Amino acid sequence: MGESNRISVHHALGDGLVADVMLWKNKRGAAAVLVSATALWCLFERAGYNFLSFVANVVLLLIVILFFWAKAANLLNRPLPPLPDLEISEETIAKVADVLQIWINRVLSIAHDIAIERNLLLFLRVAGGLWVISYIGSLFNFLTLIYISVLLSLSLPLLYDKYQDKIDGKLYVIHGIVQPYYKKFHSIVLSKIPKLSNKEKKGANGHVKSSEERTNENLTYKVVEVFFRWDGVNLLVG
Image (tube, rainbow, N blue to C red; front, side, top):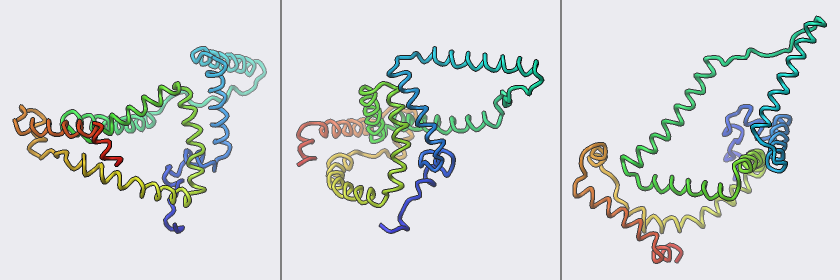
C-alpha cells in the first residue's frame, strides 16, 4: 500500500487530547492514565479495597488538607488554596446534553426499527452484539473489563499507526478468505428475507396486519429457523 492510502489515526481519533494520549504523543498524559488505571485495578481487584470506602477516604483527606491549609494561610498571611470555581457552567451542561441526546436518539431509532418496522437484520446484529458482550462479561468482572479496555486503547491505536501497512495487508487477506462465505450466507439467508414496502412500514405503525403481511413475517422467521438448523450450517461450511 502506498503512503497516500494510509489512514491518519490521529485524525480518526479526533485530533485532540484524547488522540494525543492514545497515540502516546502526550507521553505524560498516557503514562498518568496507565499508572492510574493499574493502581486502581490493583487496589480494588487484588487488594480487595472497597470502592465506596476509597472514595470517602480520598474526599475526607482532601477536605482535611484544604481545611488546615486555609487555617494556616489565615494565620501566616499566606494565599488561600488555589481552587477553581466550584461550579458547572451552562455551556458544559449544554454540551453534555447534546451528546446524550444524540446517543439516546440513536438507541431509540434502533429500537423503533426493530419493534415497529420489524427490521430482522438489525435485530440479529443487536442480539449478536449483546450476546458477545454478555459472554465477555461472564469471563471478567466489570473493573477488569474496564482495565483491559484502557490497556487496549493505549496499545492498539499506537500499533496500528506504526504498522498500518502490514496490518492492512493481513486484513485484506482475511477479507478475501471471509468474502466467499459471506456471499454463500447472503445467497442462502439474506437474499431470501423479504423487505418491507412503504405500505407495510406505514401499517407497522398502527393498523392490523393483513394476511399478506403475516405470511411474509412467517416466511422470514422460517428462513432464519432453517439457517440455524444443522443442514444449513453444513451448507455454509461446505
